[in-house]
Image 1 (cartoon, helix red, strand yellow):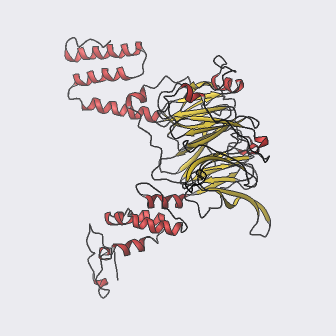
Image 2: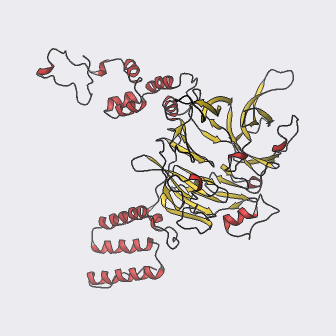
Image 3: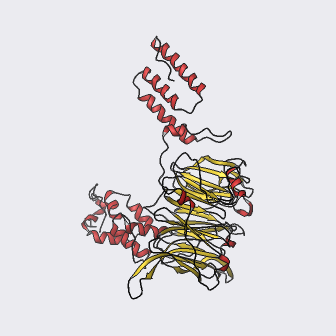
Length: 564
């Protein structure tokens, strides 16, 4: 008989009832390779639980050899484990947690369904639903084409099912985009930013990698257009903006510069060759010192986030400009590419851009909303438009944020690490499950959220959630300093406060006062804390004078003067 013996506890003592069974053998006597091989057959959930039992099993279950065997079992066709500090563990967890879930808004069945999982996919990095299908990009640059199709049900009836079959659209992809409008009916073409090997000069056998943009029909996956760039230019992101006849492609380089070119989508399916001009975007021309980290767009505006966390805006139509800023004072119809800087209190990590409203998340996990609020899509508790970023104080540290036509969604994590989906704005058509009349505040939606959900989006008739966990890529929020928690800008009337942050700050202040040895020191510390609080000048003077009076009564004399 073989029994596990925890190294910290030693072998178990045998009792009378264990006579005749043989002496227990410590698992440490087995070769490490054999232990790793046996453990690798455990499900990932059980493996993690076993690693929490003792120090020995924690080291064994966390070994790269175990995760290499698990990765081979989960993805036998995976050729490369990828990169990173822990490449096999990262690859195994990526493939264990990958999944695309969707829930239709209409119909009698309102449950969460899972799409087909491509066997060749190495995790899920990005996804995009189009008019008829869904496209998914994995971590090694393979773009998958998930098709809707008619399938036979268990009762023998034919039914239309979403994302039930898949094919590989292309390899070597870096990013992809389609029409930025929320209505997927406009997403006729898919633009793929990829790297391809190009032949060198005539007479040579050498080749070099060049970036290119390939255009595919979303309905069939057929490639209809391709444009190749010079090998010296390397891009990492692509977004679209504008109408079909004047579709602008914005390309972000590895150096943080923005280039753009214009194509006419109505002529892409015509078999002809022509040259397009690639030009430096005005945001990079006027602000050459700024390095753009990422960008997002809708049909008539573009938002840039710099590496320093600054936010710059391009708005191309007066109506959207008025909705976003509440005025047309600075709008120039002759210079629509001029970037506008948004005034924000901290570094911005990521954002979401709807038709006429937007959401921003800063390094402290605070959510700021701006723009049109006719349906309550800003989540501020009212339906008043906001011409500048306004903090949603009862919501913090989101995992993902999405803004649609007239509603917003937030993916958050509760204290027990379970995920929940919150939404606000218009609830027509079932787009806020459980709240058909909508809500002006973020409310919990009746949606079962996968444990490892990390991204979401919604179309007119369906909600999509992407499940994937990358152990080396996660949003790390900073703790808001105590002085900043209480010293935030004054909220608007009726806006709920941040009770959690304020409570933490008050506890820190009480701890500082308690650490003082004498009553006089505590009085001085209290006056110092009053200076930190966001009180009006008259209120601070009142508290300082009252503390001076108490200090004089206790000390029997005049205390130090009140600070200026």
